[in-house]
Length: 369
Image (cartoon, rainbow, N blue to C red; front, side, top):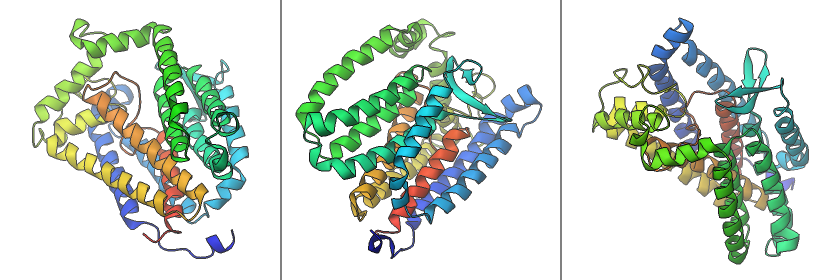
């Protein structure tokens, strides 16, 4: 193990450049999409962008620090990290400790800021599962010894997140972990049974919460309730449609004038599409594709199983989140409440995302890419 971490190359500069470019685009679009709302609510047009710059600054500093921090060390503390993440998920459920936003008790206040424990859990579980799969890959084809224990861990975390409830984050976590387990060599027959069980559970989750049923019906026919459940998706499409090929121009969006609720968060891609058009949206999607390509290449070239699974988990998490967010914005799937990595306004999400990239960049230093 010592020999493995003796030699370090430069980090993947393509990945680093892509992330920094997306981050700059995100800060610019947070300002453009939020200054009207910020002026109305806080009498400060720079309210959101100043906080985003703070989050981005902290995240970038953490990313560069983690980039030079040997990734193998995370394996040693995987159990401790997972325990802390589970503790935070339990803590957020306590009334008076957890803060309710958008109908979900997903936040813990820390001074003037707040953290989202489910974001920590995504990264913590990826690290632990990477260590578990690296040590137990030979058992992964066994349902009892390898497949089932890993699923118990994943769905325990999912269950705690659903108590908030936060189906979007839970979906990202489960899909990411399922991809990692599949890549470790789990049998397809086991996944068939899991898919049937998952489908049944998913239907139950939808039927158990009226607001989720409303989201499904709004997705199928948003015009049935254009001022209620269908409002967000209709306003999102109204933003993207007029954008055309070149967009209406930076800062010229109409939908951010209180038509699209808090456009700097989940629906920031709609404002980007309106202002920068098909070309601007395509360039951003191209950057995400480049990010995915470099991440997968790092996972393939990583020198050990832990590094391979860790890189795969991180890039899968980011890619799944991007796909879900953009699919919601353009009306392909129901609203889930998932932010767009690097672009959407947010503290925990942005900072933890940049920390994740820092780990990915460190893994790249031990590859030949």
